[in-house]
Length: 149
Length: 149
DNA sequence: TCCGACGCTCTCCTTTTGGTAAGTACAAAT
DNA sequence: ATTTGTACTTACCAAAAGGAGAGCGTCGGA
Image (cartoon, rainbow over all chains, first blue to last red; front, side, top):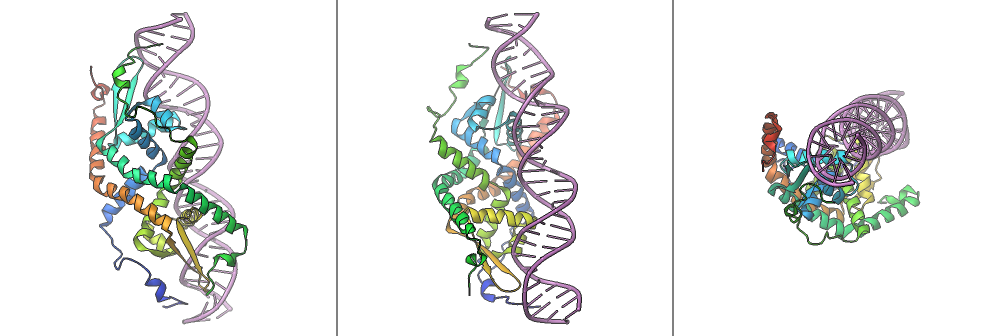
């Protein structure tokens, strides 16, 4: 049932000739990992540990910035579960625990490094885009945003 | 005021000789961008567009997977604001809108590519770590997790 | 005449996230 | 005897995220 303007030109604009489904189970799994790992706090903690090497609880909190004890504990635990950090308890009397990245965590840090560099490189561009978008929004004329064929 | 075991060995384990503060304002800005960009839906949409090139609204939704219209619209709008995607409205009668990555968006996709590859490469390792952690948790003896000096 | 297609938006509702504050354990320092 | 410091945990609460479903505009087809 063809409706108005299926526009084959537009359909042809796709890239992959085949939708490229690479094993649905794996893809779900990877999506899940991405969703977990792409957490704000995870990234920030990863970055802090990558930068400072080994930190204890409070130091880590300061290194991350504005993070509550709760989120710090929670996120760091999840990272430990996922094998990204190693938690070492020194059984001395004022408790002393320190955290460090495992090789797995370091490899993730390396992978994210590209994203940090991207952010540092392009933040000006993003702000420019935001201003441009806001300015375009000012002109409340909708047709201004529409291609006129 | 030194308390029990300040342990200079532990303190010396840090990496950078200097804490490496690279302009606090920029760092806050970058953290902010990271927090926005490291959103689950942003990453998924980025990936879908990177893979398929150009997609219209419903196609994009299917490509991403389990995403509600609301989140799709919302995230895609934010990405447009940030200059990551270009939204083109074809003023035909059943409305036709398509989305494609801007060069900026493509560069971010490239940066995230490393993370996707990481996830694909290491997901088995993560699951192994999780099972190991769960198994260690089974032994509810706390001292089992503690280094005994 | 009424339906359906598309790309939304809007409202209502539930779930998740995250912060604050308090409590805990224990020994050493005051 | 009381305070201090560390690394939490727990309870409670507010805010935000996110899902479900209805509605909208418009025109061509049944």
